[in-house]
Length: 246
Image 1: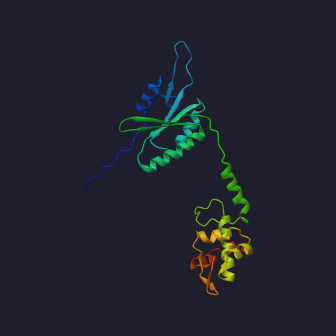
Image 2: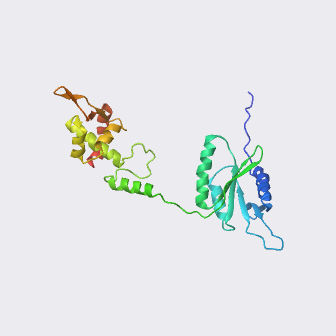
Image 3: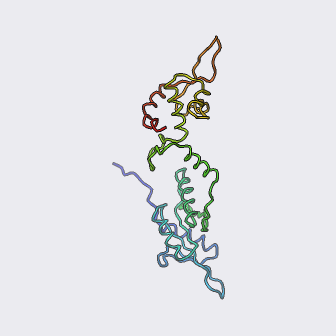
């Protein structure tokens, strides 16, 4: 049986020459494996004291140990970078974006190296992290907290598809009213269950529980009448414990 060829795993040493060339191009004197650091770069002015060193930690991919090493090297200098091989495709780009955000929060710089040609790119320079809070997201979080009745969810749930939000609780109130009273005008439901957005919830029908019902009176169709779908009837059973608390 013929052996299948596989791409050999890159080595950390393959990153050294491209990163060293980058730093030397910026005027640094560069040496490898100084103390615990993979790379140390220093600018030494003529007749002057050496500037603070730049430290670069090399790894064949993003990992928790790489970030631990980067944080540890911050005991030596503020200018610490991590360097990894540059991958291809959407998975790598997503990983790059996520890990760039992590580096920003940790005050680390980020470098990637394209091993096939040695192209080296600095994606982020080290800098103190200054968190920026979103007033809109904070307001949304507090509104959801205040509008949600009770505490129907266990924190840390792996599946978030059935999380009981305030929106779902309002939808369940509408569902229960229809289950008990049959097809009803949206305005009546809104007033009866104290859900001002009842019409919007039933019209959007994100859960597939509601349907418009065609009813005529004196030969004229009544508008805004809603009933329950078969999926809505199943939801009455699925969420019976939640319904007891709202």
